[in-house]
Image (cartoon, rainbow, N blue to C red; front, side):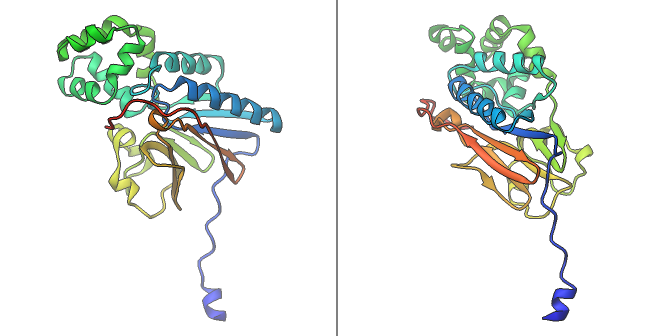
Length: 260
């Protein structure tokens, strides 16, 4: 027993953020402006209690499925413009909208199946008009109704953010690949190779993309997509030094049923 203790590996230090900030990582909003406003009010109240600098990190997928994608984009755009401490990452749904706007047929098909209809309705397209369009028509609806400023904002979103010992991404990272060599396709879309990997990464990973009933806490990552578009539960992970805690909403369930 004595020798086993002598040669035991030292415990891995807990990941931490710099002492002068408190980080709020926000999961996939998916058009639920009501959830976002509720969560932002909770963050404001939390910030008032500790009185320190707050950094907000949106993990992507602002749009699709929920009813108010336009309002969510406008809210986050305004927040990013107002403060250097507000960051937003690119999710796979932002990628779908951007590539669909360029006319990529495969992206248009996935966009239409994965909640893009709800996004276009939020930008003023009527249900009647949407339903009679083919895929090329859906592209026209995007370019005619989504402001160029919104598309430019989404196009400029980064794929990752490092703060302290943490890396923030939308979907995850490819195991065995250095962080500076990760592909956007993995950072925005990956599932099984990342989710099933139990080993350590260069940094502790905070991500969304894969829906779970509550925060998915593992030894190397935390997932915080709690399916707000259907559950009414939007989650923020609060990082304060070595401490990890959560804020979440408890609003009405959404009506969008499909998942992609």
